[in-house]
Length: 149
Image (cartoon, rainbow, N blue to C red; front, side, top):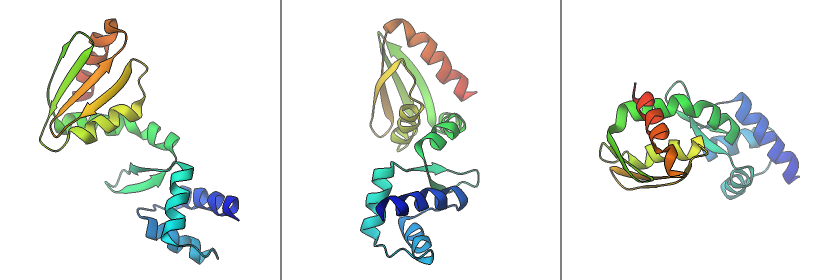
């Protein structure tokens, strides 16, 4: 039953803009599944669903691969709207953002899964990015500047 329910969840999020666990649970109930919010929450975790920003500016559940596809536009918007300045030292890039936006920007960087970035750490308005090898820092910084327009 679990496998059938999880397949149905994938079908639902593909066809409907599901924004909350409750909306997903309600859609499952309409299709004859008796579920609780806790069950839906576990299914979301097991399926590794993510919330992806739609073109309408709302968040909806999606498969990770769909989020990666949409991430380029989202990353560019985040950089244009939030990044104040960037600098680097050795293999560390430091990005300064508007207050409260560093974690969202860092999340888009992490989601992009750029091979040369081995990790990010975000505070309120500062992101530290570790790049490996060190020779890739300028190339990575150039990509970030391109995102800013």
